[in-house]
Image 1 (tube, rainbow, N blue to C red):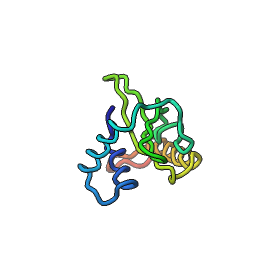
Image 2 (cartoon, rainbow, N blue to C red):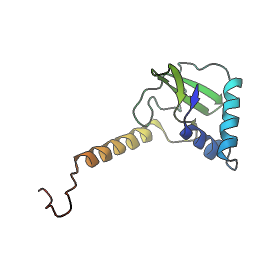
Image 3 (cartoon, rainbow, N blue to C red):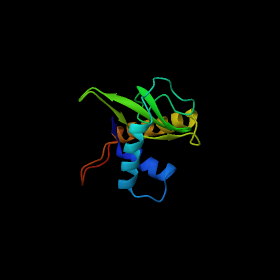
Image 4 (spheres, helix red, strand yellow):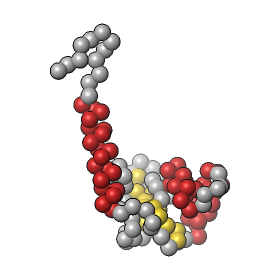
Length: 123
């Protein structure tokens, strides 16, 4: 199982503020060995999909209200924790709105054509 930098950052920011990134990574790695096995049952406070829209494979609860949603990576055949979710965070609806907003922004950026210097914009 691997931890994405975002999961370590969120652990440091939301669970253990005041420690540096190296300490947070080491502590989180240590917790992975202590908490048991991931389960396919999603805790009610964790969204079904990641912010990027990727479905979670299973979940590893580190403590009451602190969970690592896990995603299976075919290349290398391992699980990765792309983020960390804390119960007090936003609801599923808020995550959906954020994902939709990000999707619209990406689409708008792709559709926008930037003219070359000296070229008139297309209308």
